[in-house]
Image (cartoon, rainbow, N blue to C red; front, side, top):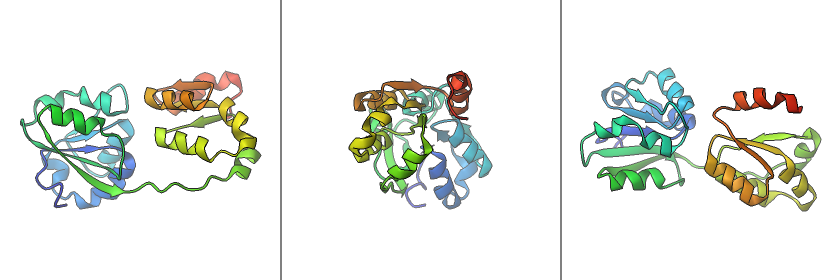
Length: 196
């Protein structure tokens, strides 16, 4: 709460950030602008009773959020607090600082890599995967035993972000698609025998 008190706006990076930090926001739920990285984060804010929510119509990343008109209405030199997990991309903060804002982080969770169960992977006979971060993609390929490498590279991958798609391609994935929503992708590709 002491970090967010002087904020002119809060930037929310995920529904998880909303779930964890919302109970500590108090009256700021309705007093200041809340900028959501994407539609799911905006929905999580609405469900928690937030008002004055700004979210990109197209895109679910920092680049899309930076194009929102709200940034032109906030006071020059104002404080923007980014509510996120520990670590993460610096693109948003760097760009906001270049625009003259003071940026702080309220880090409310941390990511702890877990060992992946490759026997479950083998038993599932997966044909497709939904990847939500470059960090996750790297962890997946780093942990992959040699026996599963070819199978992992041949899966059909979906992601919301082109930068994650680029990471997957660089890691050796041969079938990668950036899509707006997973449900749309599964509907579109269902004719290719992808499990629903």
